Length: 173
Length: 219
Ligand SMILES: [Zn+2]
Image (cartoon, rainbow over all chains, first blue to last red):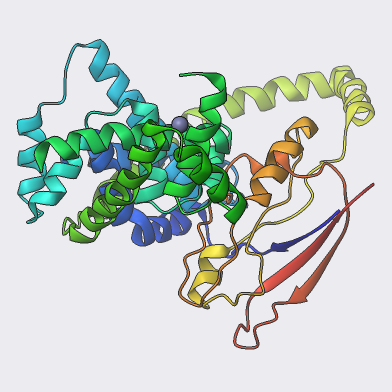
């Protein structure tokens, strides 16, 4: 079996410089992704900061380790899921007013708020499948790798999540 | 929801994500002709996907965590420095103990034991730098991907291969290549033995520093 790989790693960079580069390249997109996930900007920033710090610790332990967006999204997704589950255990529900406040301050379109409200109706796993694919742009196969599931499972969840979202969006339009 | 109908949800998901093959589309369409649920839902998917994409384009929030990450790394470095100084005292005590051990002949016996159990590292190979590659505007003839190194669990190789199979190739210069595999456990999924690695130049003449490797698994 033969496969073509893109090789190479920038061995000249130390852990700190590699993390700096990751932060520069990915912080905005990753923060927006996590904010969509948890519905709160401050909480998203805490998670994103933790993710980059975890990247630093990983790279310090093994400076030649390949680590880029896929790892960041995987780590961020896991932390966002844990955050939502903890909140659920504490009995905290995502208030739709909160969602509106969070997103209204930065985004202008009412459609954006509607989408966020529809996303907030999904369970964590379904949310992860939808956001990794339609929002972050990964294929179902790639999202499957990030989530440790099969591509078919991701596709099924996307299908069911979209039905739920459609119902929610339909109510509001 | 029956098990048989799960398969149509999978197909509908593939269509919603724009990943379905013509055959999968045809299969779903002929099913949807007889299934009200699927007929209704398939129309809805495009609308939902478009709404998500549109809301992403609408986002203006551009936060920065540079300073916070840098501060945490600084704290961590200071903590380690203090720990190192703490360890320095222990090192002095240890070196005294070592002197005693050396003169008593214990060290010689320990060294022999360590040589017997030493094992060469199974780490094989380097990795990818798709991010860098993206900046060079990838050409369509490169199957962007991945990693081979440190196979720790050979059974996982199958998972990685399946994932590799589903990766799309860039179809235009501006196409994003998600570097999803970089840094994930895929290094652990890679073939345990790599027979050869040939470095070669990427086919796009515009890429000066774009190393592409051909990795051949050992049989
Ligand atoms: Zn059906």
